[in-house]
Length: 392
Picture (cartoon, rainbow, N blue to C red):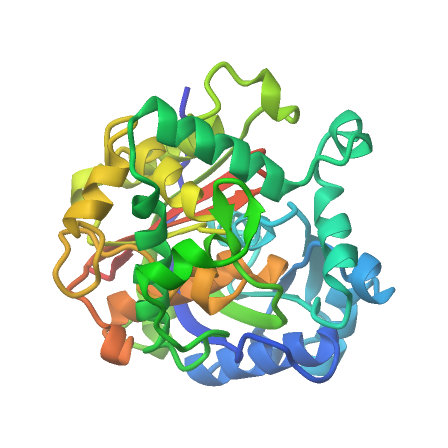
């Protein structure tokens, strides 16, 4: 059952930043410092006022041999003696960081919490990176060579056949998100692709092809949290975390009763909806974890935006398009176009929702007062759903 969570006062977000995503020079500490400094500058808050500093990062040790990144970042930002903590929840580390930062403020333990997430990945080969990411799978699955792309291909095949969905519907997710990414100056890929290009790209895990997958990415993103009363000391305009919750599903994917239902998405969504008092029909804009195109369908259904097996129809109808759809999904370009630096992705989702609600999304701007972000770890093994709203 969804947990009842209460805070002494509402938790506000007063600053946000995102570096350029893509193949970046420098190392993880360079990226984290860049995002952290820009976030503090955006909020007009001095580093000395930061009481808690959380760093979302999945694998700096594996990718770079670098550990101890939170305390090193506190030094680089001149945020000492802030308490520091690393948040690792695989590819949902960013969302888990949002949850942890919310908890630090909601509990009264901190009046100013800076959350920075990042990953440096592109210097490793594709097989090496795939192997590092595949380590999130169960050891038995890992030993047989199972990777997340293979799970995605198997699930996509099952979904298309079970629900009589056309292969083109998955391709249209990629087309939509690439189109949105054109207007995101920090996205890794700022170019449109047509449906034919998607459907004729090389097969990776049948029926999924190259353009059904997100790229290997370097980048960082940051958010600054504080109690609403503190936010009002700095600004009249800010965003409030209306609801947030996390949940896990089976570690062994084949043990799930229905592979097209992501239990972590369903349960974290229920908790976030209950805490916020909102439901699926209240959401104006959503950022979903489209590491693979099929995940956009599964999250839309798990979060109640579509009935089971029906999300593909909404995509075909244009329901999720930015300019004309009733629920714009992945206005940032999503992981597909924006990129997926593991520890930063969930925070970057939050940055997009923050900017949409603040009216700062430029050509990507939609009419939105309430937004939702869903960050998925592994193949739905762990999930965090966050709902934000404009300050009332």
